[in-house]
Length: 243
Image 1 (cartoon, rainbow, N blue to C red):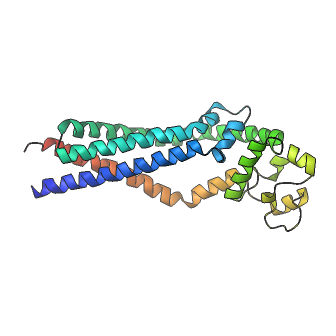
Image 2 (image 1 turned 90 degrees about the vertical axis):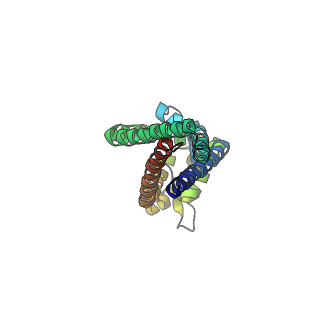
Image 3 (image 1 turned 30 degrees about the vertical axis):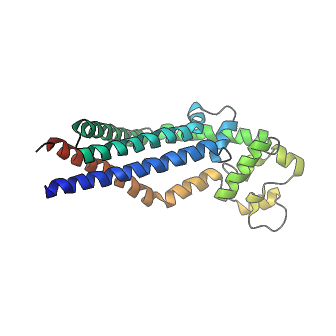
């Protein structure tokens, strides 16, 4: 009885964590979907963008779906543990198993198709550079999104300051965005921007991910361990139901 009570408590704790994680992802998805003045807002204003890139603009709705699903799954697991309902416990086990297998498959795909990812990134760079040269300084919404992105990431352009060359902004003022000359007290001219060589926003984002790679890996392994533990506990409770 003591062991059974411990398992029910652990099951409740595991699913409580999953529920809270789902709620957090749901909140993040709502924020991303509502707040279009962000890095993702750039994706909606890129001409000739590859389909894979355009789909990223809907990441907010994907997060809402995933978060809502996880919250529902956590609630289902908690109810199954408290009531010792075999149908709920079995449903929970199957759902978590499917999610775990999908995560493993996604990790394998990322490793195997790494060259394809690099090819997509090359297309993205060309599409973004073309959009900057055609819209920055002319399209107010597009310009505002880029300014916010560069201020947040402390970067200049997608690749570097040359992305702004021949853009409406530079053509009309002969100056570059202030974020391209963070250490200069004077006007941000082409020579000043070249001298400072502020990192591009894509590289800044990659650096941010790399700096937090250990934390991200720890979270990923933690989630995988949590899912495995939850499946084991749910099956033990399922088999011991009524004993």
